[in-house]
Amino acid sequence: MKKSSKGFSLIELLIVVAIILIIAAIAIPNLLRSRIAANQASAVGSLRTLNTAEITYSSTYNSGFTCTLGYLAPGATGATNPTSTAAGLIDSVLASGAKSGYTFTYTAAASDTSGRIDNYSINASPINSSTGTNYYYTDQSGVIRQNSTTTAESTDSPLAG
Image (cartoon, rainbow, N blue to C red; front, side):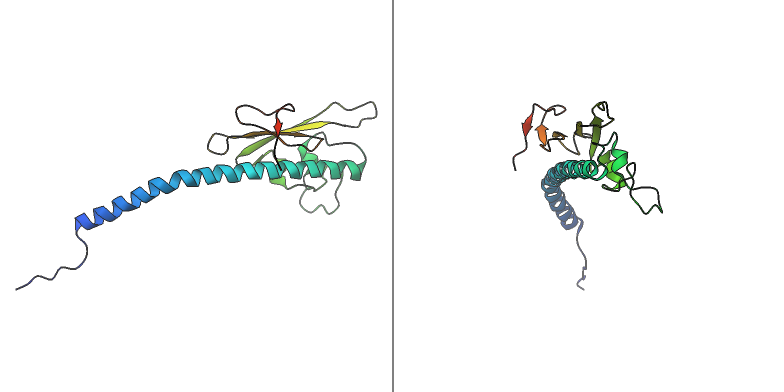
């Protein structure tokens, strides 16, 4: 009498699991690098959005730049008309100062004698090394600058393109 065996042996299952683990070991570092690159691209895009929102705010309200990112956010739920303290130019996530693994620090310059704020700067810093490796800086000039080791400043190299 011949015994009919169906299914896989333990050795065959172990070989399949080992192959899957080898493939995962190759793919996961590439996935993490892709995530870092996406976070960094998002940070640069957010800085461009913030620069555009500040220019729009300045020309719309004719009062210079904002004193805080919160002024660029939408108003309370149900509010229909934008105001100078709730302009609705950026989303509330970006206005909170953190998005896609980066924190955004907005610094407004002191106002002049008429109360206008004519200068600002924004720093984008990765929350930790797994969310990004570059630091970014921009100001009212609209030029985005990058530093790979420490907080970016106005003297760092501008981004290409």
